[in-house]
Image 1 (cartoon, one colour):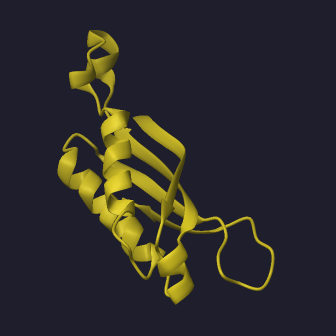
Image 2: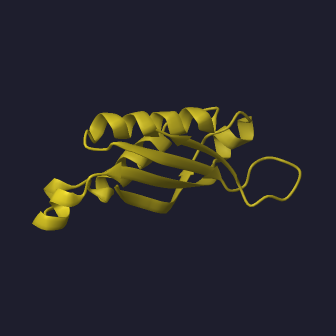
Length: 116
């Protein structure tokens, strides 16, 4: 099985349960892996025979622009939008990381992952 990946997509967004997070925002990093049969595109060299990763980025940015309390809700919305808009995707993984969560100790990030 082949895959298309979008890694390290940085998006400023307003997700979180705290008022400060919803007002000021935070930097998030999104990684997407889409399991796709790429055989046809490999032979044809045509973007119409694959999943256009630029279109995937636009889906992620659109869903990230809708504020949510929970990262779980955001990854679910991204997953469902990808499934709806790219019928040839057979499965995948979405990882959403918040780079500066409002906690009292130092962490690189907190993240939620969904797979299908």
